[in-house]
Length: 312
Image (cartoon, rainbow, N blue to C red):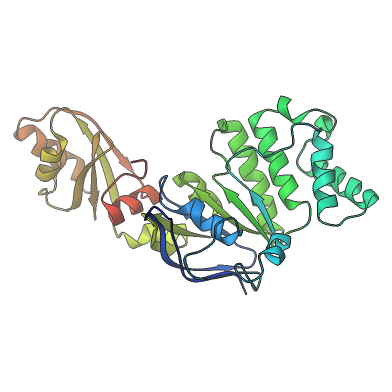
């Protein structure tokens, strides 16, 4: 069953900037769906339209069967949202942030307190229940925001760049919690520019750039679709586009492009490839400083689709 459906969804701002260009999305119940792309790709605007914060310019969008433009109040009751910025109430303690949210959604006082305590235990925040939120670490604050978004048991949980700014340990802890929620059947739509995050968490990923969806499939199928068995990263000094053109003529190489201060080489086979690459470079006077072989990643897919690095 589709929980999120969009057809031709678009947003053009008053200044003429097109943030999203007519995208079609269908998110299934119980899946984690990732929107992967660099800053400015249109991910946050897409979430904004789906959560009623941004009014679409064109197209349609339905969340849990409800049209986001025709009935935004009903949509708000069906979703939980964790934005990029910390929106916790700093004037009250951790527990009351959850209690008040439950009350906003119509729970009685006793039920709201019980639900808050359940969430504190679930998100490992019970020991901080009476603390002010401004003393929480970044990871704890983010867990509290996720707990708050889930307090009213939404049909869809929206996460906008959920691990930006978190340290590696906090990021892993949040990934574990999201995996648990997924296993319990929670539908999650997240945006991220971290390829590892999208790869690890998502059942399916839509790769976005410049307001458009360039590819949509499972991470495994997206990586398989580029049809390159071997990826090599070559580092050297000098004008790298010239070296890329040189290495692109090596037998067996499908693509060689300069990105991120190195040459990214894609080939269909690794047999003798490293020797041929180094020999070609040195024969033409290049000094290679490093060569490494990697597996295909979602960033590889992005480069193949756009000709630029995901971080650019």
